[in-house]
Amino acid sequence: MGVGVGAATVHRSGRGRGGGGGRGRGAGQSLKPLLSPVGVAGESPRAEGVEAGAAGQSARAAVLATAKAMASKLLRAVILGPPGSGKGTVCERIAQNFGLQHLSSGHLLRENLKTSTEVGDVAKQYLEKGLLVPDHVITRLMMSELETRSAQHWLLDGFPRTLVQAEALDGICDVDLVISLNIPFETLKDRLSRRWIHPSSGRVYNLDFNPPQVQGIDDITGEPLVQQEDDKPEAVAARLRRYKDAAKPVIELYKSRGVLHQFSGTETNRIWPYVYTLFSNKITPVQSKEAY
Image (cartoon, rainbow, N blue to C red; front, side, top):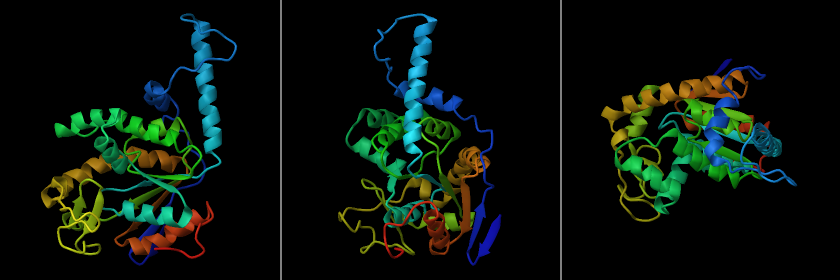
């Protein structure tokens, strides 16, 4: 269903869970390296045999079932959108108004690179070669973080980007709410070409609607801003095409489950009231007055 609202259009998927999406199987495969063996109380570990394998699988399944049952009492939300769609701005507003933990895969990756964690060092090897960080590395990064957030409401930004990542997320929780931001290509191209970034923090500035106080300088640190190579006009089209190809099956998966809500428009302030209403129906706002 689509509802036209000035510069914004709201689309909601049908309710109810669909059957597809490879739920469970892909998640188990992706998560396997992340899970440590679980013993059964009162029994000695067995090195071989079908019974030992079955017991291990049963114990692991019980742990995952318990974790998912606990997670079901908390709001689990995801925001999807191409580069330049305003995901960061929308996430900040959701976090401020509803108290969700905003977990950005980009921010977490930068932190792990900065502190030279095991995951960060692996990711660095790919980045230094000009390669994308692969699914299994990003998945490991996010799963490790989510383990520490098991008692919190959270909002994921930049994850899952691919179907493999979405299936891995399935292994630990059911996602309650997914927002997909659909922004026209020309708007994205203009936004990205006017975007400058503070590399170490990931702070984003736009010369049109969120400029730095001093041109080319980060407001907080006074350090120089840079324009990413893939934000330059000649690279934007290929970047957006890669996003679309990877995101399509993720969007279809969440649409089939009735949790996808799509918002189309060119202005975040036009879209935001509908996002606010959507979340208000799921969780009580932490502020008495809506904050922008």
